[in-house]
Length: 179
Image (tube, rainbow, N blue to C red; front, side, top):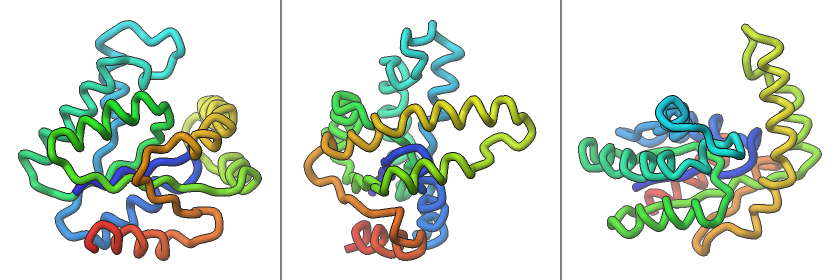
């Protein structure tokens, strides 16, 4: 089983993933962002500046997930914002095409709550300049990410992370994954 936790930056993907990890024995966290850093070190950057726009990142992500599943047979928990419909089809469809069962969860919440969370987060306590740069980038993505809710593929489970606490969300996702 693969549990892909999707949603806006600041929606609670990491917190939910950590709760799930403690509830699901033999599960593993898989962070495709690390592959993004690797892809950026290998090839010229995408004109957009977003590593998700690199075909190499999408290919690495798909194939790395398949290899981790093949070698470890663990439930993978993947906290990753992925809102481009074509990229969702490429990666999630690719996983399904290889026989993988994917629970795709989209964390939804009110825009004001999301913006407040992002503003309050300390993302890089050792580098306040970088912290502010990342915060501004995340804030600039809010509209795009929230609008993507309407573009999620069939079968996506929508959960409200603005009104539901992380433990309750984790229980709901566990029920989906084990039921």
